[in-house]
Image (cartoon, rainbow, N blue to C red; front, top):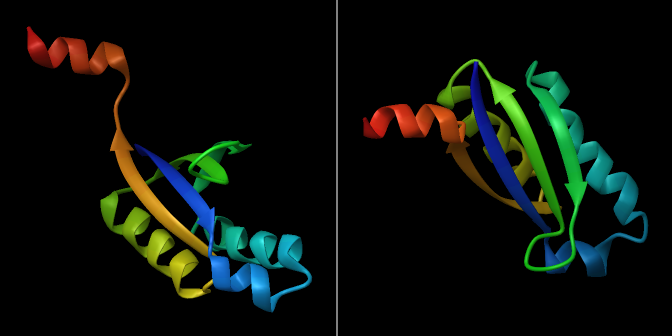
Length: 94
């Protein structure tokens, strides 16, 4: 399994259009489960992004599919990064 971090911001237009924004965000996040993606941690943040999800997907194609589907709902805008542990990265440098 590959690990990814997805940073999400609430679309400014969604804030104006939906009084039930929390429900709309939760609906968007269901896409992880629908694609059999395991979210190991989910955080709300103060700063540039509203949420961060750390998740595992079988491959990069599934991560792309999930990000595209979440963006397609129009509630959240995503930025997704593939990551490896620092230990793995260190071994690559030797």
